[in-house]
Amino acid sequence: MAPRSSVEIFNIRTRAMRVVWQTEALFEAPNWSPDGRYLMLNSEGLIYRLSPEGDDGPEPVDTGFARQCNNDHGISPDGLLIAISDKVELGKSAIYVLPAGGGVPRLVTRNLPSYWHGWSPDGKNFAYCGIRGDEFDIYTIGIEGGAETRLTLGEGRNDGPDYSPDGKWIYFNSSRTGLMQIWRVPAAGGVAERITDGGYGDWFPHPSPKGDKIVFISYDADVFDHPRDLDVRVRLMDMDGGNVETVFELFGGQGTMNSPNWSPDGDEFAYVRYFPVA
Image 1 (spheres, rainbow, N blue to C red):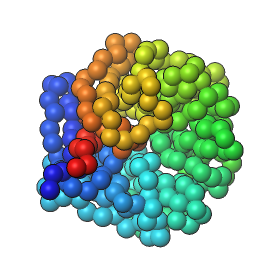
Image 2 (image 1 turned 90 degrees about the horizontal axis):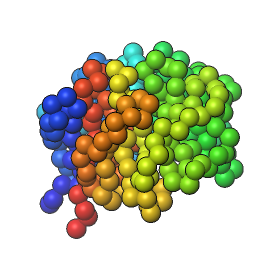
Image 3 (image 1 turned 120 degrees about the vertical axis):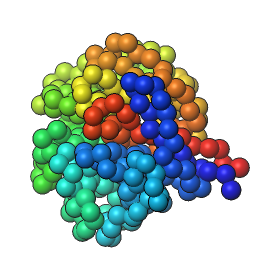
Image 4 (image 1 turned 180 degrees about the horizontal axis):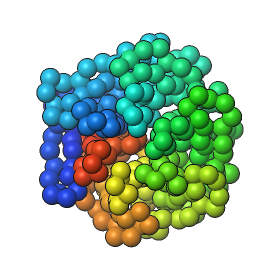
């Protein structure tokens, strides 16, 4: 059978692209471990580790009862923990942490649903999208749990937060001006700044560990939300929104790079390309 998912890596310095691994299954949202030794992805509710070289294919991570994990997951800066978003226990997506090698998930967010998106550089906090009533907003919380801090206030739909490498900013996408665009807000709270102002629907901004570039995906303007299986653009820009460029186009969208996906050296990023279902 033809492949469904192609896990790939793009080098922003050489502009070279390579295929890591292909499969007939649906795999999503590669994270890159801080030591560079593995990618972490989800498929059919489970979490897997995959070598950046492909090697023998993915190995499952023991996530205990959490077997309905979505594509909002990530690895702590020290590589010791992973964050997952799962709905088995509470019926809606909740954020948990567990040892990176596998183990029993520990609940972090009690307000639901919550979808993990970014880990602060010091490893002490998460940024995530929380849906409270009908409002999609950006929140932070300490990894031990407790009270959540709300950074946006229902100005359109706010989603996809990720920290800058200095920890000062949280980049996210927002529809507050109509079309989904990239914004940023101080991690400590404050006024949001608009970063992109173009004719596409921009989603999932991920700042490079070097603090020089942001990778994100762009849908056609008439696309609502972030569905899968569409022609989208993978784009790069400076941290302030300058020098926006489309580096390539692919068939993808949802699952291509929902969560942080840069290599530790900031030279490469991982993503998933999809193939149409026959």
